[in-house]
Amino acid sequence: MAQPVTARFGKFRVLLDLAGTGTYTAPCGFTSKSLTLAKSLSEVSLPDCDDPDAPITLGRDVESISASVTGEGVLAANAVETWLDAYESTNSVAVKIEIEFSTGTVTWTGSMHVESLEIGAEQGGRVTLNVSMQSDGALVRTDTF
Image (cartoon, rainbow, N blue to C red; front, side):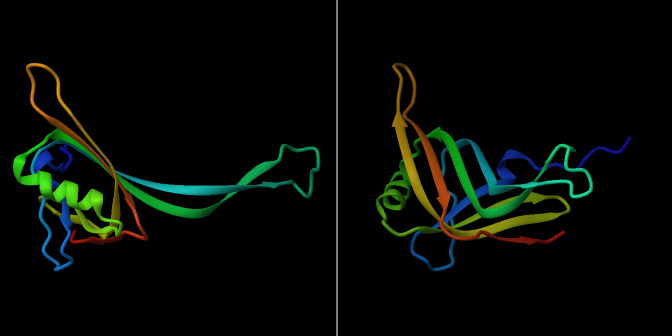
């Protein structure tokens, strides 16, 4: 049986370019992260013209698409300024999300708003960070497989 080609945690990168220079960096500290690609759909009832008593089926059309990134982990000192600047910006920031496999890389680039930052801590633990980002326009996907 052939094993699937997979990617390790460190090969899934969330990179930011706050200066807009084309130089992306990954803020340190995430211990988990995710990319969600979503569609908003509209529904329309489609009757059976040959059999009016048949159940109506639903047709669905795409109204909009969006993407979100969430991440959580520790609040690293060298990432504090990056996350606070991205959150405080009223403009979206340039984002690149990469998943690197041994066979190639999938990359999404575009703009996102830092929707929320949650900074917390518990007695006996470290300061943590939860981040939520929402797309501002389309993310463009490129593959190098």
